[in-house]
Amino acid sequence: MRALLALLLLAAAPLSAQTIPTDLQGQWSGEGSQRGGTAWRIDIDLGADSGVAFYPGEAPCTARWRFQTGLEPFAFFTAAGQEQIVTGHEHCIDGLGLFLRMGTDGALVVEWRGEDGVPMAIARLARG
View 1 (cartoon, rainbow, N blue to C red):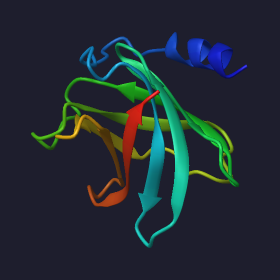
View 2 (cartoon, rainbow, N blue to C red):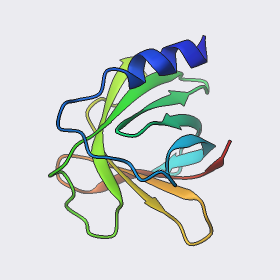
View 3 (tube, helix red, strand yellow):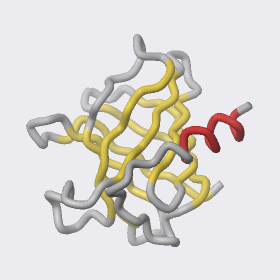
């Protein structure tokens, strides 16, 4: 079911999409944390211009990640986009800015920011 949902959501990419570098594409898993210390599990599938995030914890939700050109406000990030919650709206915040970069240790670093640009959450993910 997860694979089917990922394929359906990845196929719905925007026309002016930003291309995600091949070294960031694929499946990633790990733990994220919000300001204030709340931690949660995250599994993602990244394609060439979009992604799907699965938050399988106590407050589950699924999100579509869309990456677009012209959204990059911070030079040290590789890709920038927006998270759109697809399932579990009551558990997850919709419309946050999304920023990706590769960490020096090979981890994928994901940062979520509000409209004001202030970081709200961060995750360090490993392949698989």
